[in-house]
Length: 124
Image 1: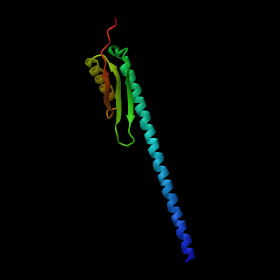
Image 2: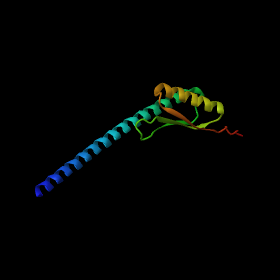
Image 3: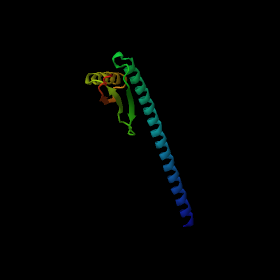
Image 4: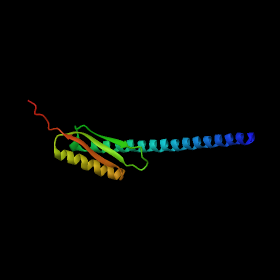
């Protein structure tokens, strides 16, 4: 009877160690994939910033695209286009450029409008 108790503990120990090893592998794969998704999102954010900066009509405006990646494996990247524009027309132009560029670079990413219309104040 004593021998079977020892082997039962050994089997339990092996099962626990195997479970821990599997958990470590799963967490490592998740972290690795998440890191790659975040890196891809940062690259997209940078490319979108460059595209908006090249537009002559947007010069002097402070528009910032920010990439967000949720923790879920198949979730989409969200690009928040934030800043201030003087007119609704420029707001539309910014979002049109951001949407077209986002679709070209990463079709599954979603641009979100976080722009505020702040009319210029007259100087005087």
